[in-house]
Length: 86
Ligand SMILES: [Zn+2]
Image (cartoon, rainbow, N blue to C red):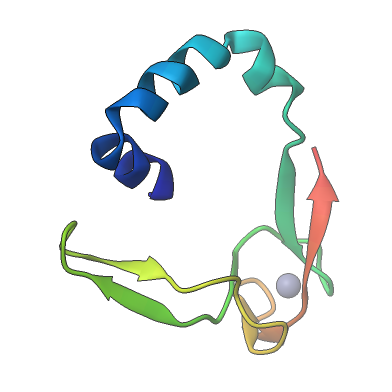
C-alpha cells in the first residue's frame, strides 16, 4: 500500500492525514466495482505488471492494469473489465 509507505517515511504527513480523514470522508468517496463487460460478473482478474517491493517483501502493482488481457472466471475466458458505480 502506498499510503502505509508514506506514513512511515514522513511522520508529519501521518498526523495531517489522521486529522483530515473522518468517517464522513470515507462515506463520501465514490465506490466502484469492476465487472465483466460480457456477463456482468465480479469474478474478474486484470492483467498487469508487478514490481518487487524489497522493503515490504511483496509484489506490488506497477501502475494500472492493462486494457487488454482481462479474465473472467464466470465466462471462463478473456473479457473486458468495466467500472460499475456502487
Ligand atoms: Zn464474464
